[in-house]
Image (cartoon, rainbow, N blue to C red; front, top):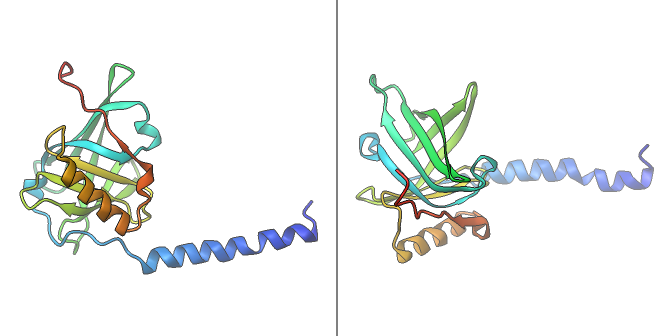
Length: 180
């Protein structure tokens, strides 16, 4: 049973939850202006990320995007090597109307969809940075398994300026020459 003295501790919790929700809504995550979906298709290697539970132990992580035949969605094939064995998942992504294709809703398990915001993109589509508006998820992607350090550092600085806790960013092992 809660004592009156414990109530002092519990009262601020709803206030903090409301404050956090308000802060997230007043500080939206900006995206790039426009994404050419067809140019974005293809293979992207994960250079670094905020590791999610389903990515723990993954190496050689990559995402392959392909426009569906009727162009109504994007096929998403995420793969990695986990404990020496291939691990993958197939999903779908849907561009959010009015976002210039910079915001996607990604679905791996029906009916759940997650936000995928393209927050930086090289003019030649050689690298991208993707995040979630709550700033709990971040991915730095490249068309090659290796990214120039100067580009990586620029993206990390931008992520930090956008409110991401970049101390959680983990480099992805991409030494996968023998793995096809």
